[in-house]
Structures are given as structure tokens and as C-alpha cells.
Length: 360
Image (cartoon, rainbow, N blue to C red; front, top):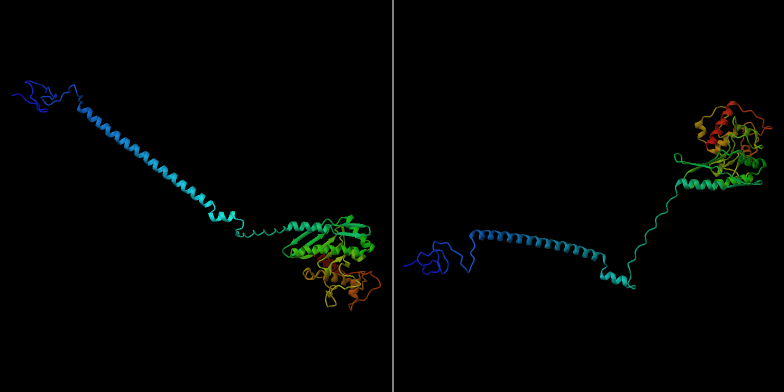
């Protein structure tokens, strides 16, 4: 009995190598027949491996693209949401739009912006303005009008004093003042002095300062010919004459040429009294005064103290105010001549009192 094919079960011919029906090898090795192609086992294994790798690559790449797509969409979504929120914040609400479009709807009143306080002018600007004002003050005499344009203004904040001065008048301008003095046009000079004081006191008030005015010459050869000789001697020096034209601190002691009060008419008014005593300085004829002693006197007291040294000799004053003042003193007796001679002590005291007057 012959052998049978273990694959299809048909009887195999004798000495058959393979089954004629299905091609199965008698020894167990399958052969290809005409109807199918059989592949070796090695090729099948490599195909399986490459298939797994390809599958992994496809899955990995697809996962990356899916992740990128999701992330990008999420960012775009966030940006869109933020932009929409910002637009919503800027855009007016429906209620606000209705109020804006409806003219009859009352609006909330907005308080007007407060105006900035005006900037205070700088002190330098104020001083310059007042220098111009003083330069515009004219002396209107019989020979024409003129003015002083060389004013200096200094505010000493330590002692609270405002110094307004024109102490170095040149010869041409000084001579115009001297001519008015020589002609006796004191009313013209007084009117000018009042205007100067008005402007100066206005500035002193603005700066909350006390005032000292000084106008005159320094070391000039010119002088007023009508000035009393004793006064002229007081103002002379090796360099020439230094003559005060307008000096004072207040209305009460503002003086022209150390001779005439600006604010007092000798006929209708009397300046305020210096003191109730007979003398400002009782012994100025017997001892030398100290600088600290005379520094304690007012400008007006210095003026009287200096002239009472002459009054002791019976000096007859040309200024009505001074003459009336000393006529009221019990110790004063007018002399028949003004040719007097002061002692060394008295000369020293006159010079000291005059120096302190000029310093004010």
C-alpha cells in the first residue's frame, strides 16, 4: 500500500518526491506549483518588520500634526478672545450710546478744570520795572524837564531794608538840580521828591521792607552857589563835593539838600517833634560820640543832633523848620553873625553824625 499525502490525503505514487495534486513535498518541504507563488520565510519576516516601522512613523507624524493643530487653534482662540474683550472695553455700551445719540438726554456735568494760579513775577523783574518807573519821574523846572536814569535798587534781606539810590550823579545832571536850588524853586524839587517817594514806598510795600532813599553826588567839582557855607564845608573833601540832594526813610524825614523837608510846608504844617527833651544829645559839645551811640538814633534825630551843635553858638538857620525848632528851645539865642568856630570835639561829632546820616 502506497503512502498518502499529508496535506491533501491523496495516495502518492511510488517513489514520489512530491504530491502530484497539491505539490506538498514528501519530505515536508512545500514546493511552488503553477497556480501560486510561494515566498521564502526570510522575506516575510523583513516585510513584517518594515510594516511595523512604517506604522509607527505614520502614527508619530500624525500625532505631531494633531498636537500642532490643536495648540495653534488654542492660541488663535486666546488672541481672538483678548481682542474681543479689548474691543468690548473700548466700545460704548448700549446705554452709553443711547445717551450720546439722544440730545435731549441729560449729560453728567464735568467740573471745569481749575485755572493755574498766575506765576508771581521774579524779584529781578520787579526791580527792573521799578527802575524804569523811577527813571520816568521828571523834575519839571523853569528851564525844562529832566529825570534821573542811574537808579540802583538793593534789597538787603538780612536787615529788611530796601535801598534806592542814585548817589553818583554826573556834573551835567547835578548842575540842573543845583540851579533849581539856587533859583529857590524848591516846590519843583519837592514835587519830584514826592513822586520818587511814592514809587519807592510802593516797591518797599511789595517786598515788605523798610525804605531808605539816597540821591546825590560824589566827589564833584560842582556845587550849589546858594548853599550855606557851613553846610558846604561839611560836604567838601579832597576829591570835591559830595552833596546830598534827596535823603530819607519816611515822609517825616525825607529832606532835600539836607535843608528842606519834602512833605512839610513851613507855613501850614510842622514836622513831628524829635523828642520832649531840650537836646537830642546833651553833651555833644564836650565829648566825642561813639559810632554805636549815634547808630541808635533815627535819621531825623541825627539831622537835629548835628545842627544843634551849631545852634549852641546861636547859628541862624536859613531853613524855616530848623530855625523854628531851635527858637522853641530855652537855651537857644540867635547870634548876630554866623561866623562861628567849632572845637575839635564838635567837628569830630559833626562828621560822625553826618557819616551815619549818609549811611542810612
